[in-house]
Image 1: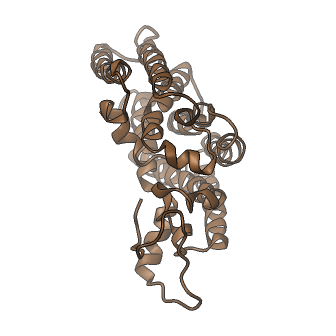
Image 2: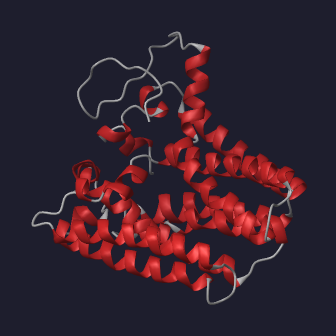
Length: 299
């Protein structure tokens, strides 16, 4: 995400403003917004709001929807800021992250850390007081999982990082459901599973495109340690499981024919793209258009 203009420089070399250098207020505001990774949060909120309608079996209280989405943005924004703080060393060496605020020096590491912690605290209190404490606990759990389990423990150690680290991205469906019902149900668990199996085929196409970046900094994303053919097979496998799990809501009585029709059509389109990727002689990310478009703003 490019939020500030930087001068031409060799790849992987961070820019830091000179001592006392002028940093315009507007650019600073944009930089702090960029720390929250708003394009990622769009995807999280897209999974939160529809679940609230399903949980309410109709139109939920719109004030509750507003407070839940604001709390979700604050919580996810805090997690993303802390992720940038921890990953600032490798972000400075990768082309795709070379213009992030910590790399350009628009925001200092200390400011980023304080900002991320503040958002984590405010979002937890916000959820607890304005939504419910179950949602607050789930949001805080998602934040800690993303920061500690994914960013600190998994990302630089295993090619399964995005598989298990993706659990954090599944939490918004549980948060949306609990915001309405102050409880969880099998429907929420199924939706959680849909996002869980969607995450790898959503992100691996991007990893295939920028695997040289990850290889340069020693992050073992699957396309770095396995061939494109192997990655394509894994994408197809996860895609089939995702589509199958998405259809479980209907026999359990949570949805009707319209949901089933849409799930079949969209799932079929997704599988067409996945198999198109696998069937190419030399798999390339451009052959799987839907996941790549969504993945371009991922972590």
